[in-house]
Image (cartoon, rainbow, N blue to C red):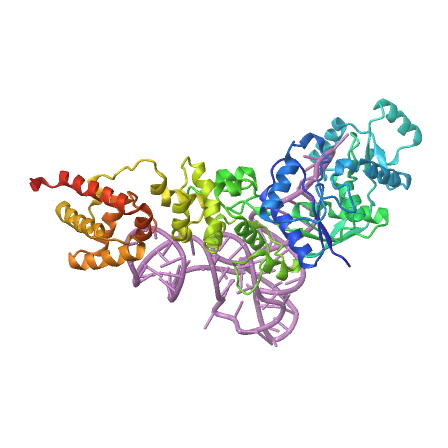
Length: 499
RNA sequence: GCCCCAUUCGUCUAGCGGUCUAGGACGCUGCCCUCUCAAGGCAGAAACAGGAGUUCGAGUCUCCUAUGGGGCACCA
């Protein structure tokens, strides 16, 4: 059997990271089985439609590298792939159901429905439609038809008794009592189908073999199963993926979760927020693949080619999963470290520019290998390399030049010695600078940190910086000497007997 | 309230009846390395929700309880 799966988002705004995980698992499953990954847009709710969402979705998936074989932009043999363009198909099958007595027209107003719901709630009964319109006589039907000006919805006539068993690929059999299920609306009064109808019709017509969707759908799965039954269609294999929970493990991950932010860590939830905060695609994919699934062998870090090879839906953990932002950040650092430095520099450039700095391409390329293992998020580049982009040098206060167990005079002498030594160098590269200054440290009998720390403050003017030697090389001999001179002079102010 | 799903360190997870005095990872703590910060190395604290069964034997199977989650729309 050919494997065909689909990711079917609604164009109601930006992609949620939970949706991305669903897309990823579908994609992994398709690629593992050499099947097709179909993108379908479920825009059957006109009130929630957000202009531009479809582009947001396709751009997001593309950014991550999740490519689809059929979809609204690519077409394919089962199109159209946008549900609002398939309305006649839904009507055709709805009519079929009504004609065969498996669905019926319901004339109840939203107000009446609300009253029924309230009454049920009060009486402690299960909430749901009371099936008033299910067994209308033709006269009653006609009367209601006139009263409501022909406005009606079509409801599915659920079997009233018996049980429905749904075989979930990761949970096993789930059994429901039919009497506890209500007659869901299939066709809305505005002529658009509900998810329940559209999803079943499309999955069948598009020959979807496996449905991998979020856990939220478990409750309506038996109705879907009964719909396939009513149509006489074979139901695809189905699996419900665990929900992603808030970082504290309480509740479904939601936009509100940003407020749970602790330790100053902000929590991205919408896909587009991830690049904004400096996460890289391979890390996000790796992280998402790790939530609810594991690749085995105690392995945490991997790329999608390996995940495709090993993906197995039956290994998915059925329990909900807290969004572990710490682990994501760690993984991001790991993936950054494993990148080609040239590629990393390309990613870093716009981040620095976004901070209003002009980037010197040569300097960036030179410094990148030295900051690579220091970055967790792309914007961390700023704190490490700011000294390279600042238009004007801002020297530190002379006090900050003085290292542990040093006094101003001693510090000044040490810096002067460094100045003298550096001045003589013809080759001003990292290796040479390091070798010369290390021997100098012995010669003038100070500790490495006592000289190098001061040098860092004098030239780079940052407490934290990339390694000194390459930093000095990139800053350049002339500038290094200039700044050193400035620092040495500034120390005069701290030496009372200077004159 | 009703239905459904789940429950191993704080978190992500391994474990599919004996090899579990429960393994890995993140985070945390300590030490080492060290020009700062990282990275890396080593060490450490840290879990089978509880109770009944089944079995020679249960983290692994069954039931109950508790807890958490999902759902109960003319939203998906």
